[in-house]
Image (tube, rainbow, N blue to C red):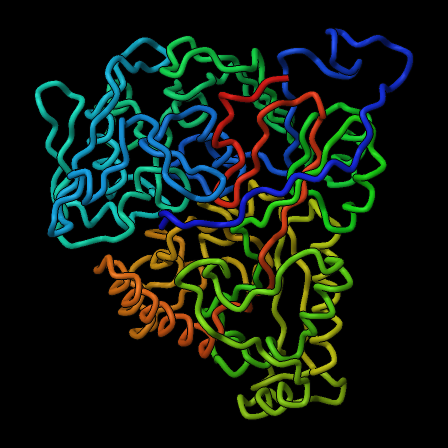
Amino acid sequence: MIRKLAALAAACVVLGACSKVGDGASNVAGRHAWTQAGTLRYGSAYEPDTLNPLFANTQAANDIAYVVFEPLFRYDPDGNFVPAAVTQVPTPQNGGISKDGKTIVLHFRKGMKWSDGAPYDARDLVFTWHAVLNPRNNTRLTVGWEDIASMTVRDDNLTVVVRLKNINAGLLGCFAIGGAGYPPLPAHLLEKLPDINRAPFNARPISSGPFVLTAWNHGSSLEFAPNPYYWRGKPGLTHLTYRFVPNAETLLSEIKTHEVDVYEGVGENQVPELAKIDGTVVTKQLSANWRRLAFNTRKPQLSDRRVRLAIAEAVDWDRMNQTIFHGYNIRAVSDVVPTSWAAPKIGSYPLDPANAKRLLDAAGWRVGSDGMRAKDGEPLRFTVSTTPSKQSNIQAEVQMQQDLHGVGVALEIKNYPGSLLFAHDGPIYTGKYDTEFTIETNGPDPDNEGLWSGKFLPPHGTNATYLDDPIVNRASHAALETYDHAKRKALYQQEESRIHELVPAVFFYWQNAYSSVNVDMKHWRPATYISSFWNCWEWSI
């Protein structure tokens, strides 16, 4: 699900001054007094649900995967593959991909090691393929991996030949991070276990990446030190702290007092405050993060597309974007990045409360004496869930609640911390929710089969809307069976048009991500795709 695409480069705008705070002298020449030389403190609204990428469902887990693991490929800020654990990105031109598109040859770097000193090589990739498809494992998403027919490791353990059952135009993304992209896991620690769902490794992983985990202080932070065996050499930081600060106002306060060095994904209502913070720079980056209101289509109140369409037309999404979210983000019409070669031509749902009422009447939901709708004695009532870390999320829920009340629909707010909401056994992936107002993250390739196909319903995938439509299923899979962009684009147009018709979700916006960063930090290069931790070994302060 994660592939190559040229995208927008980071635009870095210096808004803050570089003055000192207090009377203390800088602890190192040229640095500010608040800077701890060699130590970077990153502030995050979320705590990972697990540190094993096979089971993780949070953005925090993607960040940490880049810290702890070395995937075969990393993404640069524009979504291009960067060779990491392998020496080159295979293509038909360099012979790494066969002419028929069904054989891929990968060459691991020589001499790589895990942080416990064991060799890191092609055998770990083969084990990970088996672990992903092991029916005993609660793998979050298997799309792509199940198209692999075989993996053959050559005698040097550095070369693996991957043979596919069918062409999969997005398969290389399985060897990156994000979506169904998983880095190799250590075979020497895990291969003898019948499953790895509860392996101690999931909370205390060894490392193939630039840093090793030294402590997980639950509810507080993750602490990291350099990995002495990292193949690129010693990272620029001597210590990395990933702090959990679930309240956005607290996080803003801590960037102001310099208790954290990086606050990424600043809340929209906080952006004007950033220019007032001494000793920081502000970056703005179009990200492949899209917010939507997703429906659990298995819920009786939401199973009728007329009800979902009525909800889409009853809420004033444009006004919400301009007021609550201050117009910082780009309105969305699909889950394909608007800068993508595959972006479909689809209109927005109109704001039409009158038609919303007609749709609800036609679906049998009648207005009672109290002005609210019911059918067969059951009220038209459902819940909306998000993470309450940002005030704008809650304000948006309240606005939806008010707009829907105007057409006789009762919306109840039921929020959860991110580590619970997105957990494998949490509300979303067990189907114990009605609607979710959350963010999804895309990779550079438009492959979205895992999000919408009926083949990938939880617990065997991440299609938590439970949509199972033959047109969507067929188009999303057929788009992976060709490398021809024109053919793929036509298939994604067909798929997205059908999704727009069925309304399993209302696409709200693409996020313009603002970050506030200590001016003493070097090599911060925020990324459009997956995680800005893609080059964390280069960071220094």
